Amino acid sequence: MLTKAIVDHIFEDVHLTVQERTLIFSKLEYVTVKKGQVLLTQAQEIKNQFFVIEGCLRTFYLDELGKEYTLQFAVKDWWISDYIALWTDNKTVLNIECIRTSKLVSISQKSLDQLFVEIPKLNTFFRQKLQKAFVRQEKRILSNLTKSAKERYLDFIRVYPDFEKFIKNFHIASYLGITTQSLSRIRKDIAQNT
Amino acid sequence: MLTKAIVDHIFEDVHLTVQERTLIFSKLEYVTVKKGQVLLTQAQEIKNQFFVIEGCLRTFYLDELGKEYTLQFAVKDWWISDYIALWTDNKTVLNIECIRTSKLVSISQKSLDQLFVEIPKLNTFFRQKLQKAFVRQEKRILSNLTKSAKERYLDFIRVYPDFEKFIKNFHIASYLGITTQSLSRIRKDIAQNT
DNA sequence: CGAAAATTTGACATGACTCAACTGGAGTGG
DNA sequence: CCACTCCAGTTGAGTCATGTCAAATTTTCG
View 1 (cartoon, each protein chain N blue to C red):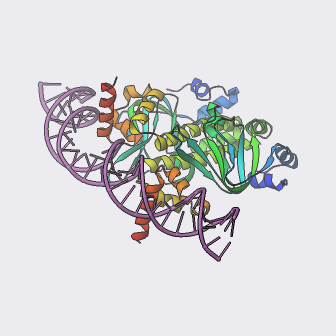
View 2 (view 1 turned 60 degrees about the vertical axis):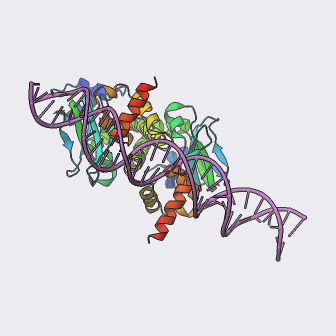
């Protein structure tokens, strides 16, 4: 279950009063999801963001041919959601899948929006989080533009060494935008030239 | 030159007091740049963001072989900077080039950070801006993962019809991550199958 | 242990790249 | 006003990275 300590953990170095902490805590919901479970499919409407306490999830896009494209992974202390739907388009675009049994904190965008009004310093906190996330995305875009599949894979395992442990290769491939076969050949190539 | 009206324009629907508007205005600098001018090279240190009043700019990454990769375009009412350097890495990564004679408002990150403290509602404003920008990037990443060069080009001219007027094809190619030759063939193909 | 899932391998296809040459338009200066 | 140059764009021929399809092998896990 959840204790109020989770609020301090999520909002790291934000200095919160007892009242503020209690208010935030009242908006949180504790969720456990099993491996393989899909939190949200493209059919449903998304209203929440999820903070990962433990485990691993991913968001992916499913095209007309049934191919999957992984947009984001989330492990401990990361946030995950279908932000395209949540923040602009309303219509759900992504699936959120649990790829390792996980413990999450769920909060609705509506609650968050209320908290932004009642505890203005949360705006600063999320703005800074967003700046970091924005930069990570710019780097991923640059990486897609400038690098070969092999280089992108090497970057991936270098930048996210902890991911490799419990994320399957076919998920990594779908994140890098290549086929599982190509990834397999790349890995073979790397193993040989060592 | 700049009048205080620019502040209301930049901060759209934020309700500002006279004092707040004056304070913000005191931090802004008016800049004009000519076509071809490079505002910032990878050698220099970036300290500012730029708001485009008129004209067009782009940021691009220059690799060891001298190839250019366009990360972002900015036209009227857009912000542009080397956010990778500004918000996380400090070391400059991108070049900011003016591709059409432009009028800009420049503001240092330092001034912005002061304003965030003195006028907390600006946090909300920028958080919301960032959310939108974040979603645009997620879409671009998805587009890179799921679509062919031809589809990405068609998407580009559909989503940014106003860009095509003054952005050269070779810049569009470098944004899409393809060569000018490939773009030329794609355009030929589209023209023929109409 | 056995079935299902994930990965690897092989043969072949293809989209996009490279290099090199050519075209066409926009200045510019004699 | 023509010749020249520069720059963007186009075209062609050959190559290479990655995809596709099909099958074999290995790993995972109930």
